[in-house]
Image (cartoon, rainbow over all chains, first blue to last red; front, side, top):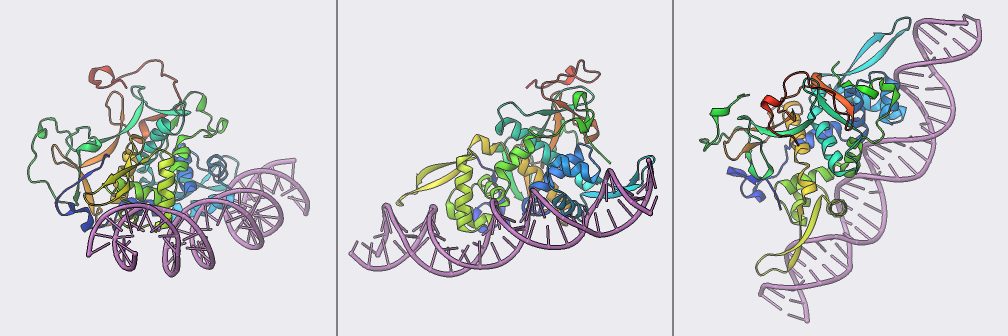
Length: 175
Length: 175
DNA sequence: CAGCTGACTTAGGTTTCGCATAGTCAGGGA
DNA sequence: TCCCTGACTATGCGAAACCTAAGTCAGCTG
């Protein structure tokens, strides 16, 4: 039964609740499957309304509602654009806020490739520079790969008193 | 307008559709917010029905339905357990399949900490060994950190002919 | 053996999500 | 000027996801 270890004031798990949980808040901003699928198509480069709607496989009324929400919430932005000889049309593109959801989508894809299909999935991500496959990982600030059984959950900003091993020797970023 | 670059047969985006997309399949297995929240509590170590239900903030009928689904789908497993002097009760724990969703939840939390709250979120993950913060990253098999604008989307198993730079020098895993 | 606790189940009702179908509306082309 | 395309909007309806409140049922405990 794997689980994350609680530390400090979180230790008796019964003594607190995950009320301000940002997983829940993120889901409140996305929640519906259609939002995920439209964002996926935005990552794939779709910008036009009918393109987004058709490729995400959601009906136009739903696409319109969802796109409006995503723009209001700052994940997408609308910009007018004009193809040569055409009238100006609205286009949709990822904002920085939306683009930073990439790890969420890649993590879902990675998990689905492994567990939700037999054939490993239809597409894969590659690093343009070296051509090798791309995946998501958990890393700490000292660049160690971290596994579930090495995770501590702590209240925000509670710095652990001292590091016990590892550490600055192979530090790469401090963030 | 950031986007992933398409390669090979995917290049005219209009020529294919994301029908077998494993993001969608993953969402079909999870989709509801209550499933995410129950899994979150499983990661936090909750095993009992009433604990999972109360801490996830979902009503008992929903918790019962969701837990049954998650067990059927192999993300959680039921095991009888007995606290001393108590009768045997069912408990729920993450399977390997469920545990591998960790990057998805961490990615959601990380995004929510940054974008869905002002205070950075209530809790944070730390690496037990060194005490530093844990986050999700995109990495390639040669261990390069990968950004959105360095991503290529390719059909599965389409190996890029040759790597152009980077590569085996600092390789760590081949997967 | 009566009562309590924990793990559900049932019933009823609301809200949200989504689809299909059918407009509307603006601008460009024939 | 009329038609076409693309981007929506309006309406109506079924299904899904929740919630509250109220059981049920199996084993301990007293």
